[in-house]
Amino acid sequence: MTLKDIKEAVEAGKTVNWSNSSYQVIKDDKGQFLIAHDNGSAIGLTHQDDVTLNGKESDFFINPL
Image (tube, rainbow, N blue to C red; front, side):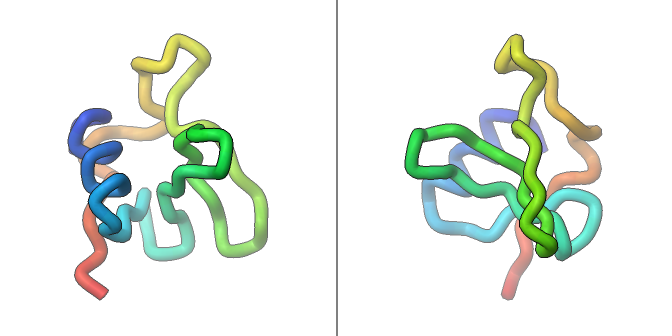
């Protein structure tokens, strides 16, 4: 998934995961997109340039829960 695809899916209420279902892409109350782990830790979806993903595009997927 591209960065645009990921953001649009999250905005549409879809569950987007990275690598496996333990990592979910979320949008926090400040409008930041994060990759959050089940254990409570999180990193930004992108590097500080807001373009480069913190992960390969091919590792992001919509979870059809």
